Image 1: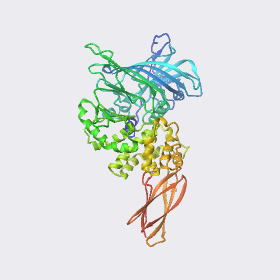
Image 2 (image 1 turned 180 degrees about the vertical axis):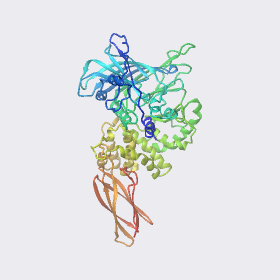
Image 3 (image 1 turned 180 degrees about the horizontal axis):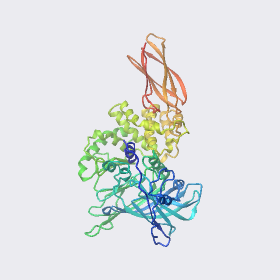
Image 4 (image 1 turned 120 degrees about the horizontal axis):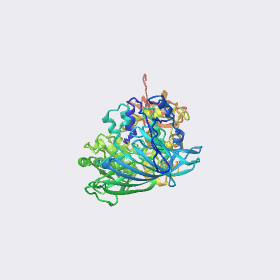
Length: 627
């Protein structure tokens, strides 16, 4: 099970009413002669042009709330390169950053004003291009993609308008404190304790960890303001931002001030980086200084994060070293439970994904046991508790799958991990229990899917940015492929998968077709490459007639698919003594009569067993009476 920050926040939003955000202010303007101009001294409320409500004190404030930056401009800015020089002082809770950026204009119009955003807990100190300071005006805008509920937005005046498709380089300097802050949830009426469990990000001596966009905007972005409670706007914006910048180049030079023992390693953008030798050891009046570097690489789909760890990790014994746990001193004895859980699920993971010598899952202990777990690639943050291993196996199966199966495609990476978690549920319980776990998420998927292809936004899996697609729907895709291609054949395709070879959208389809010997183009067209919604099956009628031999019965099952997606489902006929299952393929908007010959008198017909998600019910039963 993957429990991310967006999932935790979404659960809270469903049960809380939205409350108004606080007014925002314009705070500074940078001048080209390196002198900071005095504040304008007027209150501005800056917000998305799409918001329908405005929280201002009076008419004068409302008039002053005009913001020259429009949502279309924010949406047109894509950061294609991040080179960050980051300085942390955990004892002061502060971060200072010099960010060298490459920015592209993805609109069809020249751009004279360039919006750049950071968390409202951070302050812009200067923005320049080609060594020349640029004018900018800063606004605070209400947006719940940051844990404070606001962003600081700099409206940067470019020396020359940026042409459509053109790129420019910027240098942005900013700094500030990052404390634990749950204002975005508190403003909705969330109890303090619950808000803190979700928004646990902070820089401190006890724990330094900040997730990226959607939690703490600690690096520059450009996004459309979104408020929790306004439908799924926040989560859609988080997904869109990740999708837009997943191909950006990302590198970090990190310097940390420390007292006592230095941090042993850092996790930057989900990747572990070892610390260099300290350049300065701490004294009585000054801290020590230690650094590390993350070389340039593709940012990937997850929002970049930053975590520090101390001490040596706890690893399992034996020849397998695919898990390391950085536990707090008080929790180190609890780590054995996670190691035992990994031992339990490892055979299943390796059966499906192959044995990988370089697979390593890193687990970081959260400050409080109740804090919401979070996964980014092969990095899992969770409370290292004294729970029984059996209670952690499903989570560990999913997390370990991230270490064994790497892909830049979210639907493959996250879909496989979710699928493996349900497979463990099946192995430790039964198939019905595993499908019930998926069924718990199906209604959210059905709600997100358009009723008619093209009539709603929808998302094909190749370009999906919403977790309900790249996790839930993708997991269903693997359940269906297991039935279509065969268990061993699908496992062979997953084992053969190589991320570096996945350069076309058909790559994984061809792997499954090669291992199974089946043409699955129709399936991938309906469920991966396009979003045709979900099927909508029903049993229109069941008709019996005598078979050719004594005791045999012909069963004709009239099945309708009123949805647009084509699907292949199991059709099962039960008698008192036995049962017979055959698979039937139903294109969208069709109706078919499937005939089966069975020994005995039929008493029940079942269409679909829950492995194929539908708009409404996913198991259809018809009891045969008056025989």
